[in-house]
Each structure stands twice: as C-alpha cells, then as structure tokens.
Amino acid sequence: MTAPIDSITGRYVYFDIEGRPHRVYFEESGAGIPLICLHTAGSDATQFRHLLTDVEIAKQFRVIAFDMPWHGKSLPPVGYHNEEYRLTTDLYDATISAFCDALDLDRPVLMGCSMGGRIVLHMADAHADAFRAVIGIEGSDHQAPWYDRDWLHRPDVHGGEVCAALISGLVAPQSPQEYRWETLWGYLSSGPGIFKGDLHFYRADSDYRDRVARIDTSRCPVYLMTGEYDFSCTPEDTIRTAKKIGIEAVIMEEVGHFPMSENPDQFRKYLMPVLAEIAGR
Amino acid sequence: MLDHLPDIVNANEPLVRRGRFFSCTFLVGIGATDWLIKISNGRVASATSGPHLMQSWQFSIRAPEDAWVAFWEPKPRPGFHDIFAMTKSGTAVIAGDLHPLMANLRYVKEVLESLRNQAADA
Picture 1 (spheres, rainbow over the protein chains, first blue to last red):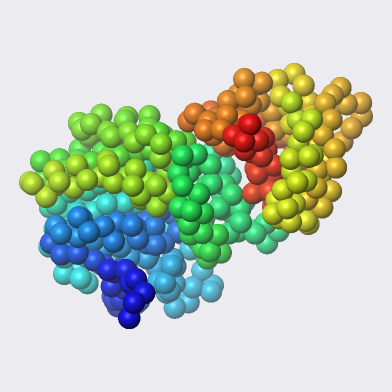
Picture 2 (cartoon, rainbow over the protein chains, first blue to last red; picture 1 turned 135 degrees about the vertical axis):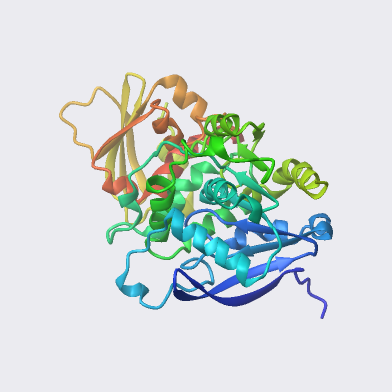
C-alpha cells in the first residue's frame, strides 16, 4: 500500500436517544483526553477532518467527531418518513449525553461550532461535572436571525443549493477556495429539511440569555472563540456572552463561521493555546 | 458602475451554465442610481442605469454606494463581504418577489460578486 491513508478510524455505535434506537457514525484519532467535536447545523462531522489528522493534537487528545442522527452517515430513526425533524435543547442534550455514555468517556472536553457552540453552554450549565471543559466556536447565548427559515425546505427551491448559497457568505474571503467549497459541500449534500430542523433548536429553543451567567467555570471551564467574518453569531454576540460568564472571548481574524473546516491552519493558531491550557489543568 | 457586468458574466462559462434555467429582470440600487439587470438563460442581456420609465422587475437589492464599493473590494472587510451581512446590519435592503432570488441564489450572488473578482484581477 503506497497511497496516503488518514489516521482516522470511523465506526458505528448503537444506543438509544429518548427511547429510540439509533446507529451513530463517529470518527476518532489520537489518545488521551477525550475531545468531542460537534458539527454545525445542517452539516456533518467531516468538518473536523483536519483536527482529526492533527499529529500534535493526537498526542494529548482522543479527538472524536460524530454525525448527529439525520446527518452525514448517521441514519434518521425508524419512522422518520412521517416526521418533521426538529432539534431541541432536550434532544441535543440527550444525544450528546447518550453518546458519551455509549463510549464510556471520562469527563471529555466538549467542543462545538455554531449550534454546537450554543449547546456547549447548556451542557456546561446543566452537566458541569460531566465535562472537563467546553469550547464554543462561533458560540453565544443568543443571536438575531437574518433570514426566513421557510426558504430552506420547500419543493420549488432546491434545499441543498439554497442552504449552501445562504451560508456561503459566512466563510471569510481569506479562506482557501478548496476549503470554502469543502465546507459548502456539507450543506449542498445535507438531507431535506435537516438544516431547517437544526435551526429550530438554534432559533426557537436555545435562548440562554438568562442562563449563562450561572455557569460555574470553576467546575466546568468555558472557552468562546468566534471569527471576525461571522455575521450570524457575531463577535459582539460572543463577547456579550463571555462577559456574562466572566471569561475573555477570543476573536479570530480572517475566519468566518466555520473555522475548523474553512481555514484549518488559521483556526489552529487560536485553538492550540486553548487545548494546551485545558491539558495543563 | 455595472456597465461591464454583461461582458464579465457572459465570459464566465461556468457561471452562465449555472444560470441556464434562469431568466429574470432584477434591480440593483447603488445609492440613488437604479440599475436594471436583465438575465436571459444565465447570460446578462443588459445592465442599464435609470431613470427607468414603467419598467418591471422581480426583486431588488439596494445599498448605499459606499457599501457597494466596500462589497466589491477584493477582500472586503467584515460586514461588507456578503449581501446578507449587509441586509442583517440594515445597510442593504432586498425587496420584491424573493422566489427567483432564492431559487437561484448562488447564481445571483456570484453575478454580483463577479465585479469583485474583476477588481482583484485589475
């Protein structure tokens, strides 16, 4: 064998979420402190492929990224064909908690982007002792909407095309074209109505503005990092949230809403000091 | 400001191909000047500045001239790098029948952004 092969192992794990059986796809690499990565709304864990192949990170962290049910290679639950997919705080919490239990992870670090950056705040509040730390990328306690979700899933507009075209502006102009289009592929290839269903959580069921101040960072440290080109979760949204929690927000230059996939080298500059701090605790 | 739009877009074969099912007239407002953009099967048939007397269009995108200038920078600064960044901040306003826009969103955004690439090549 002479062709390059990524140092990633992909497998499927079976467990129940809110009483329903699921088969969830996850990828992992490295050894050490478990670091769970949560993808953005309407995409999948491919977004973390650069992190999963980072030799330095793999020395200290067991990096694990899973496709949420209905996303990527994780199937929707049996009976999905008569349902409207709608993610909620409770369902997202149940999914993450069940995944951690299924893999028997010991106080993992929980890192998520966008909607993943929102739920980590809930998890730090609701399950402070279950996590070593949480990292919210493009995360905040709330943000203002900027389009009507009904455009995302209707028969006379192609769902994948419109989702990708909408969010394309959230990628920074400086990000390499290769990674810009790889990031957009996640949206182009998403299942029908899945981005919209994720946004139910993001827009309608995760206003944490009155909750984040009570997060006990002595039990569960919180890190928030946002790209300067993100007009969805803006740097102002993140800074406001960080102030309430009592931490410093990291604002990343020349990246947008998808740091880990749109410009992995730039993201790495900001992430490595955070991971080093967590590993040193 | 949009005089060269037909030449730029029509010379971009992948962009014309992506718009092959799209024919529409839309309005781009640059400050006080309205430009009517007529698209025919992915080609820009014409781009003409106003005043337009009794002309119909399906949707409009309007912003102040300095905002469009910032938008067309090769590497625009945050907030001026995307039409929705500009609408969220209130800098730009989109109106009219949004269906042809949303059904062909990548195409329309790339038509508008093609002037940015032109600046980068200059």
